[in-house]
Image 1 (cartoon, rainbow, N blue to C red):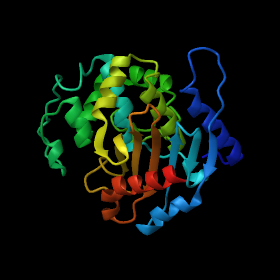
Image 2 (image 1 turned 135 degrees about the vertical axis):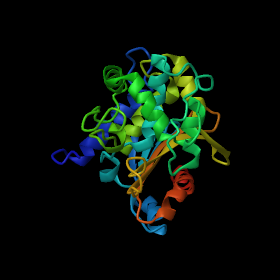
Image 3 (image 1 turned 90 degrees about the horizontal axis):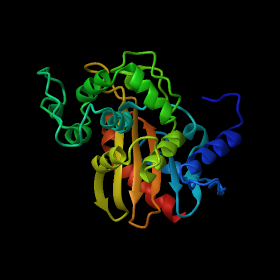
Image 4 (image 1 turned 30 degrees about the vertical axis):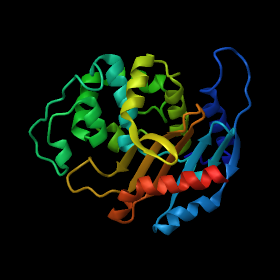
Length: 282
């Protein structure tokens, strides 16, 4: 957390960083999106018995809607939302050739989640949020290449220390805020991350969640506490991504909340859709 930095300044800086990904290749200046604080959006978390934050970049409206400005700038472990950059790095380094042809064999260790106990492609591992597969991917990437790309992506605080290479996003020092998630995701959406367009297109494809009245939703969930050790308890849930209505002006979002009851994890998608609808209409 940035305890010594004024929160308004911090949010303004985050807004500038977010909009930078939409800047033209020339030196043309563009106006940063305006910040709209909407504390009433927090009622959606109260309705399910918890607290959290929601931030949405409305690229067409030139605004960032935020429910809780302090929490939106607070860094948390990314947990399985790190499967987005991990997939990009796997493709860019050749650890995965594409979404479907490279097979990651099951190590025959039976785990609590049945979907993990099988062979996987990158696509199926992403959908199943298979932690063991992505641990294998991280080990194959190696520490030097992993740090290089985390730096290149300007991902969170960039700190992959504090835990082994195959768990640093689960229990290490890496932290990312909701606003930083949006900053990263808008670059991926636009294809302006400093890697090949092919890698970015493949990851955008495997991020598909559903087609709904809001448009095409792509993203990734994450759960702090799950996947670290058997029997571990979830403490925080993420859902980050975007809704694309086919007009090239997506709504890019990041949501996290404290997990106080197991049932709340299953509500991540629905609460995010509720928040998106309310924020879009504001």
